[in-house]
Amino acid sequence: MGHFQDVLRLRRQQGRLGMIVRGMVLLAAPLATGCAPMIAHGPSVHPGFSAGASATLGTGPTYENGDDPGPLYVGAGMVHAAYGWRPVRGDLPALRVGVQGPVPGGAGADVYVQAPRAWLGPVAAGAGFLAEGAGRSGRVMPYAQVGVENAAGFGTHVVVGQYDQGRRQFIGYTSHERATVTWLSAQLPASSGMTIHVHAGLARGHVTRQNSNSPTPYIDEDRWVGLGGLSVELHRPRR
Image (cartoon, rainbow, N blue to C red; front, side, top):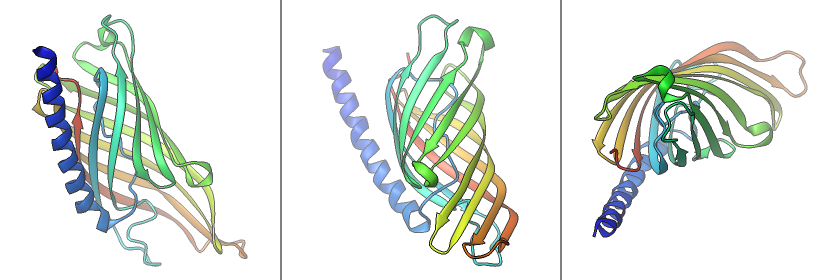
């Protein structure tokens, strides 16, 4: 009987996730095609399978060549799935391995290791890396994450990451982008198996663009974009 109820609960959550994904992607898709790298999970690893959807919007200055505020990106809709390993022993680290997309260059992989819970008490912290795309169009962002969460699942967390996308070749020009991305998020449990993350962020970096036949960049400046986002995560019910 208990197993049957778990199956029914999972199917209801999958139906709600499907509606959420469609709504969030339709909301964000007309606004842009990518976003500053986003960490859509909290610092405490949920055991087992989890899945969700995110939407991000951005705002920033319009630069002289018409970029608004690129190429740090202004918004995106995204889906993600992951599996977490959380040992019963509190003196061992936890691991989360996830995938997400669409992102510039295709799909992304997110690997995160949480420090042993016995080390930090009520604080959850860890480090990971987010790899998006492949080859010259891809980027890798190492990041650190720390936060607090109460027994009911309410909490807050901070993520700081940095990436250097390298020099990419386009038709007639090359582009180089590097940035530091900071996210501050509130964690709100909608149910025992669903968590909502409300994000506010800032991407600040430097952009260089150069014509293929010129030794001098025509863009060589610092840029920034303010970010806001929402993530919905379905996971194993809290006990």
